[in-house]
Image (cartoon, rainbow, N blue to C red):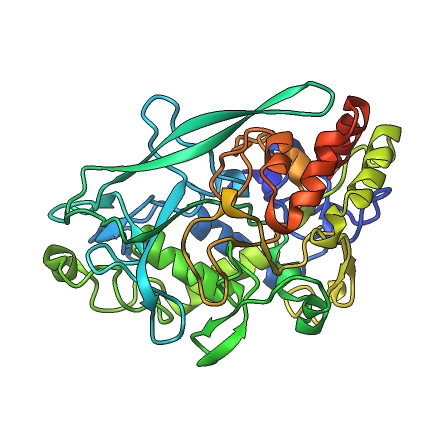
Length: 433
């Protein structure tokens, strides 16, 4: 880990909130909260190493605690998709391979807890790689159809609609009746603060909650993480990602992600969890303690005018500016803080244009959780992807806004009607976040 990523930035910097950090753009998403005590700093560094670690097939005498890759997997490490702790990149321009994305799969019906029913031949997710002796499941390939949208003043914006195909499928056809959703890797900073927002604060918003299965509690709880709010907390979200994306099992997800008919995968699987509870806790602590980049140029006249437009268009109805943190055991000094993530952590109907045809607990095919906007203006500045929406189809913020339909149709229509100077002001505001 680079030394810069370990620097604790003083909270007394002018204009910086206590949960924010000022750092070079290349490290803006990798800083801890300032003032961590020594034990927290140790956990942060340990978790940072695990998040960046390329996992091994094994056996390994030098690194026995890092063995467990596969038998099926998407990438070798967490950081390979969450580039610089930010967004994943859009598919490769040359071949369309979705390297920083996951193709989630299900079929009609629900599992025992009301979640998506995994695909019988491929499981919950298509994993393109396999360890020696285990065939990777295949590759998701994305091409685009383009459509031009003309704004009221005559400016034209080209929108991309993704077309998904599969290549080199190892276990038969996916099936026309399957439910498929491509998900780009989202940023991971600031999530500890969102986990600490009390449930009542979230439910005071105007969106729809998703109630999902909590493995440790053995009960349904409010979902707040994942693109459809389909995970109740960070520990379960992280353990699920280890299992599905890297093939690393844990006490929460002790079974390999092998479908029933994948005999070679089943035979090659681990007989005990690959990830220890201590490793899972350290990785969870790392994500919980990641600070939010401080705003830049928030007082510039253009950004101030754009913020007024943001509210006037109704964007703030879903992208709630302010939430309040409750008890935050990992960073007690931030308990009770007011934060500005620009999300309500609830589901909203975004229309047919963004629908993925796949339900996820109480989230319907057109429903998506409002994504946080903090750090938005730094997307792509530090080596991560500068692509937006759940499947990275939008190359610019203007494209992302114009894809808003359903509950957000009026806001998108209002953006179309704005004169260029006011559109530019709105974009300046978003880029200041």
